View 1: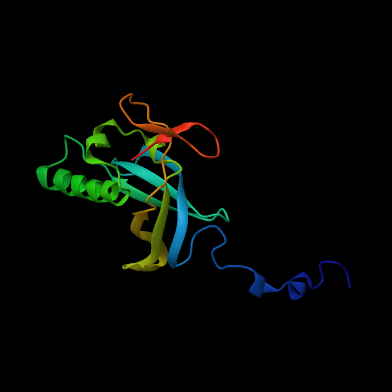
View 2: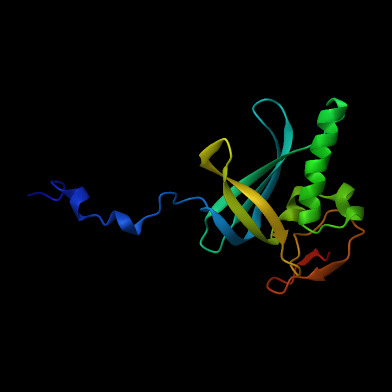
Length: 159
């Protein structure tokens, strides 16, 4: 018998996860590891937030951004979803118009991951709660209260 005759018979498949990259259903302590503004395939502008746990597993959440050319109903709905996100992240309202994508990076959160209602094989971020004392990345606007990050000494946003 050669090394490859029964290579699958020697594997303990119980050791692996069904989803080795993403977070499974449940509640997870994570940090926002990436934030970017992008356009979807159908042209909608949105914010992608990537939530990553200590093991390096992650999940992304898309929030469609309001745009002036959207009809009133769509623009107001998109604004409402964005407001919910910013409130859940405990970002003060007076900071909203000065946000940059990098400002979300390193925020510590607790998220709930659940199957999408119309496609249970697809996991989505449900509830997001920011950990009270976490600070985000450095803001580009100049009027924010900053405090040094404990690990790096770099300034981070103090909400």
